[in-house]
Image (tube, rainbow, N blue to C red; front, side, top):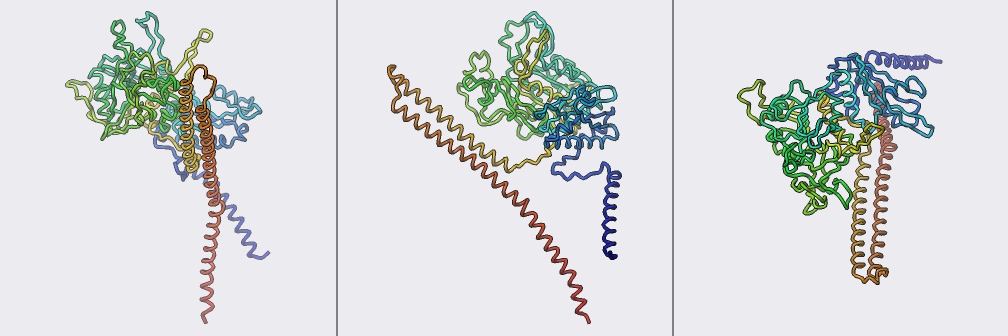
Length: 620
């Protein structure tokens, strides 16, 4: 072996040793230092999360349970579990030692599985062998408070940072939050003068009282309690100016406000003991000039009717009771993102005022087949079909709930004598208000069913009304850092172009399907007319016109089905062509471009090496 070979082998060995040494040093010296080059900053904590970690009062221990063996054949779950672990490790790295992360694999029949069950984590069956999968998170603090996320769903990935920050914040600052509740409706348990019996509280009130400290506020008063973390208004009707001033000053001072208004509150039965109570029932509520100052328009005399979201079937639809599905809920706001169905009754709507200094974000929208109608039509309504008379959808979508943020000015003048400082405008952070145009959505009949079970009352939710209200309160009770945490983008990279092609084809498919249904109904109508025009003795005999009409419909139906098959064929063809182009680019074009670049670089390098040699050979 010549010296050149020895030097080459030695250099190679030296490079390998140097590579290993650099990696070992980087792991220890550069721990916690990383560059996030992902498109949406998936591995970078938002400023709100970092401030929450800096303000922790209590050390927090997090337990991440993940079944390695049960997930071996589930690459999507394994990928998401890795994503969760990386995000949690990022929280730990920025916690200054306040967070401790324990990763646990709860194998069957182990103490770790018992620990997961004790935390209340959910075991999901996978495969045909009966094995179970855990992917859950639990946390505890030094005073024994425990919280858990039973199963971390990949579909909620964009809210992963928010959920983690929320758990850490509540465990690190365990003091129970205080809600001031001002309501003119009988939400809490008490004595009902109308029935002379004990009245149960609303299910929502029971839920809130279990989660938070609730202090009731009299609507007739003029002051708010001290130390409120959030103010909750439910049907605040006929409030005096002193109370409105207190509410406005609370909001301008940075206080968080959740309001449930209503143009026609069906749960408002009027003043107890008043013989005219029935006539007063269903009163409207508003905040008067406060809404104007916040840049919001709200009509107390009209409600929204909706042909598409109206409850019931096409034959007996009630357009004044709306069942809003996920398509009508804002999927980018944490309050509404994970909900599937919310029921409203005699709901109003909000609109932003032109030129307002605030920002208006709709949380719940009607469909495009909606329009306003007078709320007086709902009073003493005996047949929901009557609402269809003269109803014409406007083609617009109406905001049934909205988030209002930004700068705002006071609308009420300062009192002559006041013990508190008067604010003429909002603080630097601006206002933060959630508005809902319905109070009936909070009542039990629109979202829960109660059933007796061995002496106990079982409550079963059939809609997400309770989750909507609790989400609103929970979100607003979080400090400004928690509220400011953005929803994270998913780490998955969807094929947007494929989705666009598919959506376009589905729209065409739906339009043809609707046309087929329309033709079917028209044919049935014509057949009924032909049948009615015949004599009773001919009821079983099919006329030539009927036969021609049926044959025309059958031919047209076959034709439209051929068109639908062609649409599906075109859809798959476009997707296949796009896939072929992507494969050509990835498999052929990119390597070819690299090869061409390498050849050009090599050619130019050889040219540079030859030039000195030629120059040297040409000299005497």
